[in-house]
Image (cartoon, rainbow, N blue to C red):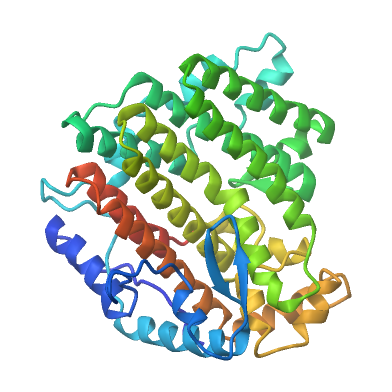
Length: 425
């Protein structure tokens, strides 16, 4: 079956301006441009709510209406997914183009994050050898540092927008450290909850040192991040980052539960996705904007960019759980199904295969449930529909960040939206 994808091949001599224009053009040509229509501010899923026979569910955390009556959603998403499959532009992100206006986002953001993990280890001042080993375990410099990169780029983009300064302030860089520490602490806790065996291609902390010690190590990393946050001394930033920790806990509880009402499941899923993944990115982006620019409009731009990119990132992650192997992911494939979790591809697949609904309610606990659900997802349009929804959120992210003054960092943030959609691990 044909899956939505971006083949990794192209001539990488194209200039930055044409890459950005092509990205926006590609999104607009697929009907993703929400800037028209009499000045209305559309969000992902808004056009679905216009269909007369559909029911809507309010999602307060997104502040928008999401249509959840699946028959019409299925036909629309399938149509757009097929269109995207046949018309999407192809680019290679493994290479860097030579044009001086365009730089690889990870290289551009990385110059402000030299010694990132060493600095984190210095913050984790521990006298106990075993606790130090546990805390340092994932701070080995082999991670993607995706969140710190976004934070550093956002800081520079907002600073330049405000006063032409392209430098990252010390307290803004501290947000990058805090974001990575909070993210890592949640990984440690998630692995305990899920009884995971591998993470980032290596054995998990809980498997080496045991669950109790792993929980304490995660708590210690969080407490250290809180100390770094307190040193910044900005009450607005303090409120933003503590909101992240609250969202993480609430998101985990949402994941542990499920909705009997089929029409509420997708709203439940997106709310969980925001709280567990996108909240950290959104609030960290807003925090550095607060530290670098006094304009509330810029703060909102930074927040909405992070929110939309974060949701898209997790949607793609949920697709990869079905389409990538364990070696690529660095963790077991189909992990969510085995944990009884129904993600976007499964929820979309329910339209073609209603028998999945019963599996969702029993959390895929019957023998053969996981394998049957996998087969149903791959036979349905669930993967294409989830990818289409991720495109919608990435488009919203690009639309928001394009409101800032042009700069290499702003363009890199736009490019990150395309990279999120094309990643394979």
